[in-house]
Image (cartoon, rainbow, N blue to C red; front, side, top):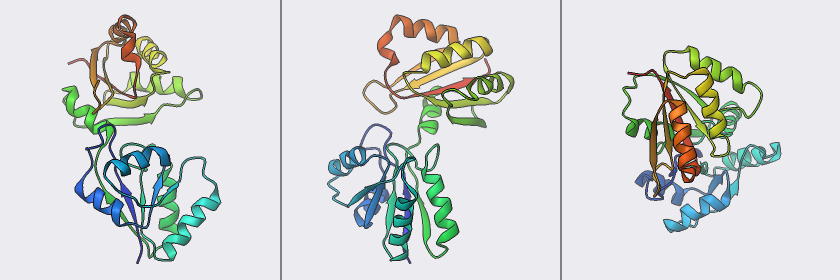
Length: 226
């Protein structure tokens, strides 16, 4: 029986990977990567020379069929994303779904590890027992509706944002959630890891004063003031 391993990889620091994940990445026949260049950097760092193949949101159906054929031939395959846990805000979920439907004899195993959401909460200092995760917000259609929803809910909301759209996102939060607390976590596990907290207006002022803080991938947490 072949196995598809869903392997979490570092979100920044290349040492943030489990011993089991390293063993799996060495033992499998193939590693499916969102971007082979990113994954090969991780593999080289840990002296792993397993063959890689790209699989991402733009991959054609023929690529998915090739993966299914390899699994049916008895090959063991690991699925990774560029950072964090695959299949969460990630096209890997579609692949897992189709393999479950078409290959009932294939074992699908989780190899857990880094997650930007949980890492951000761990250093935010917020009493979070439950939250709503929005993933990456849409660029245009439906974006405004989501900010209106975040304004209405009492539960903590969390989403990912790029440095190119963070000012726009904070401006929307300033408009819809002026009294909520915003926690902006950037560059998680990297040299310039940083946490900003306050109202959306206060964080916008900080970013205007320190434009270097606009760099890096970001996790945004919106919570009630307590």
